[in-house]
Length: 66
Image (cartoon, helix red, strand yellow):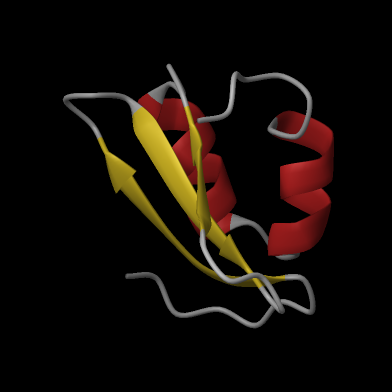
């Protein structure tokens, strides 16, 4: 799991074979699974200076959620 500081995201994990990005938001009781997320989007999230801002710009409302 990547080490980062975010006001809105507690943690995230990525399954490259299934292309599923799983995110736990602060204050949430469970996780959200974003489907068909490319590896480069996960890499960008992992390397972002602001994880929350990257999520808003590159992930939110762009991928189906399960």
